[in-house]
Length: 255
Image 1 (cartoon, one colour):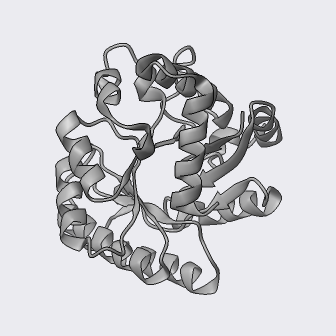
Image 2: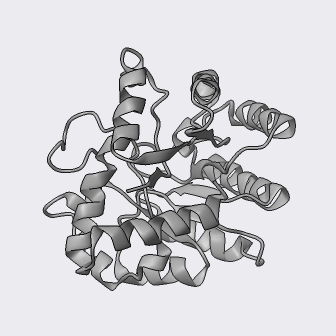
Image 3: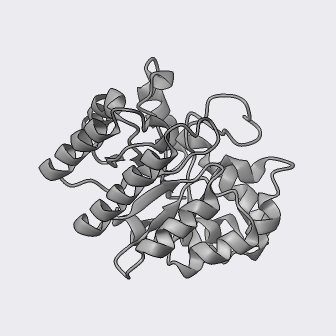
């Protein structure tokens, strides 16, 4: 079954010793594309090197993660913009808002998020949104910015049915990963009500590994467990899950 992991940080140090094996595992499980979200300038080089190593499989995004928005965020945005001016990227991101760890730079997060949304419109590519403890706030920003040119995905969606409806109304997708396999996440109940045409698959590797690997390092090969869980929740075949999510991913990311 062909699969696309739409969100995976396999360029991080967690994979330094066995990245070739990780890519082989992914290939063995039918993962044909792995999209690499940017974090900040401290990891851009590693991300782009991995893309060079496996250009048929790994496709890089460019952006500034909200957790990396600090005093120097203007410089970080400048560096990301310079990369975007040099070549094509599959998406802007990941960007967004994160009110879980630290709210010191909330105002700056909003500035960085809005600027990167403008880039997505300018380059006509999707925006990949990180919305930890900030789904409603991110929805509000997208609602304000949506002029018909904006497309993208709420990565690692873990919201409720009402929030899902708002995201769909804005023309955005939801990225579903390992959290859907967690026993008490509640995401299974929400997934029952969401049409498959609004879903893409992701791992967020090395984070949020699905059951039976919860708590361990995640990797793209584990997408199959997410597929199986969604098929159980929706009462459809795994082939149907793959069919929908592959088509959605290709339509959104042109990959």
